Image (cartoon, rainbow over all chains, first blue to last red; front, side):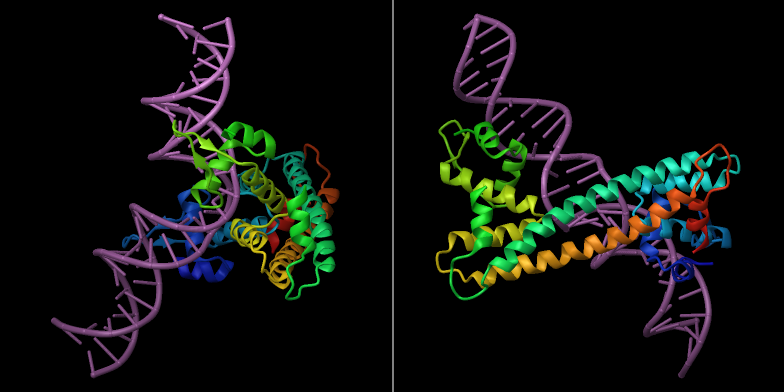
Length: 128
Length: 128
DNA sequence: GCTTGACCTTCCAGTCACTGGAAACTTTAT
DNA sequence: ATAAAGTTTCCAGTGACTGGAAGGTCAAGC
């Protein structure tokens, strides 16, 4: 399987797959012509990575999760610890964004949005 | 006012202020010794920037907002348009993160987190 | 055989908003 | 006089790609 087929099979850009090889997340074989060759198993790994990334896990978390997945002797506690930490980071981001949204939403509502220069948004930015 | 005083007055790292000069957000004068000299007005501008950044506006938005703030002939509609677009992006991010949180939260709950290898989190990552 | 086009390769640079660190200069305090 | 603190510039790194250039390879049509 060449890279564009792997890309189609996983929904990832070929560029991303090359990048993942670059940083050692996957190690596809090479044909005599130098082309990367992906096994079904590697396509499965790529899908695992795509799903983990879609859940917001960072690359290093993905590396750990992939290793745990491959490891039959893993403890689910190790997986859970990674997921919990990530969940905490996501919750912190949501909290920060929610606070921003509250303020911005108020300001957008308060601003007339017309031809005149007076603007509660600028007032807010200027004062604090 | 030297850079470290401006940093204290705004709560920004001096590095960040230098960076803002680098990209043309602010243009402090220079003393005979080459040191940057910040006026009260520029400190005010920096605080404006800090506040805008804290609300999540990108640098280019900050540049536009700063220009609008300085422009007595501005239309509040222009400010509002920037804020609304930014608000929409924040809401999209919140939606994405909230979806991640829902899935992750379920998975973390479902995982026993013990010594054994069976793990709903890995199962989820592997299947889709 | 030859050409065209689609595919593949590597490598370099850019994204965003800083942040860290090195080397060298100036100012301030002792 | 010296040491410490503050300042300067410049270069590199962050995360996770993404775009593009230059060049090699493959399959199809003439």
